[in-house]
Length: 472
Image 1 (tube, one colour):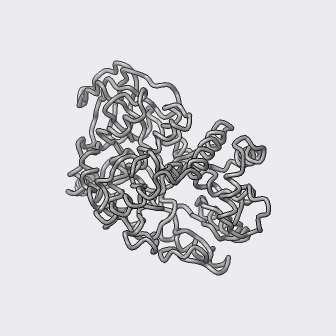
Image 2 (tube, rainbow, N blue to C red):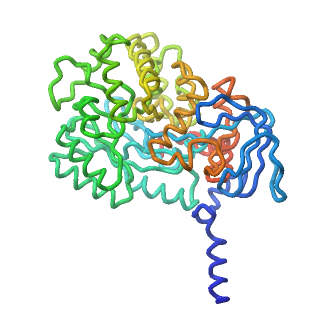
Image 3 (cartoon, rainbow, N blue to C red):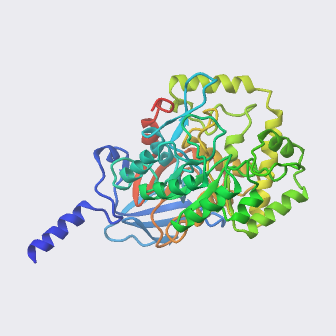
């Protein structure tokens, strides 16, 4: 019995209360507060529920759990007191359209993506993203292995919901994406990726309605949700089939194409239809009402479509994160688009209105940044920028934070444990220098990110990825 007790003690010593092994030397290098009992005092608190901010708030963190929240909390005997005067706290961000890849720095006529296994997990965590869904993988085995390494404390990064590669038929021509020729292949792929450890499914531009029906059925039977960046299938058709989530706001909606060919992707007609559609069109409001009734979540990636003229080269900052070749390419494209993106502005402004209409109608609007396209969208920096854009769209600061935290948690069915700052929730907190309740741009001044009760130094994480995005 004594030997058994000794063995149990050894095991407990090697595992945290959240089930992850001791942090590696690499991970510890970014930790400012090891797991313990902390009383964070005098914070401005935006709790993630959408409610107004509260001032002079204390948060008691015990191990990996938020124990108490309130004003003038008593100091427990064994607690470390952290005076947070002048700082704000928001929940850890829950972002649902992220990737661990980035566009290649090869010549302009070749489009492809490379895995960012080292830099992106650090950048996401540095920006306060404590939970993310990859929403499409090019190396699912790498994403699954990175998730396992993070869970074990071997490397810093967010908790991850790993998504399958983009399930699609032939048509896009990107080397890193596969293509299937039959519905049966999609079903086999779903089971293969589920067995690998993938937890969500992503569908893409050229699938058919019959494909989607089979994919949704197979994925749901494995307790996985399906999200889609669509083109060949309309949003209404996908909602009726049972898709769980639609990507990119209304930018990928082919519902407004008057003479749409069934199961065919017509991107130029989609863009033309959106340009011609009035923001208050009955077609738009009817579609929104239908999606809300069907309980289909909509992911805003509005940052991907942010125009160039008069805007940052890398929205959210972060040009220093780019490898030299990547930086040159991003600057070159940014310069070439100055004053030449008037149509982009029209679509950008329409989509902002439609996404807010969806939210105001009771739809579950969630957030993601999609670091692909032309290289301007950089992990972490884009997540901070997205909150600023939500406020630009007309959301209040508490609403912007709710969309980026609680709404994502609801979609993942984890709102009982993450998404808001409240007693009994996991201690996922973002500590910000300044008052974010008065100025959303304070999100760019993150001091500490608590994930599962462990405090990470945001600046050290950002520094670790400096000059590496676009190289590995």
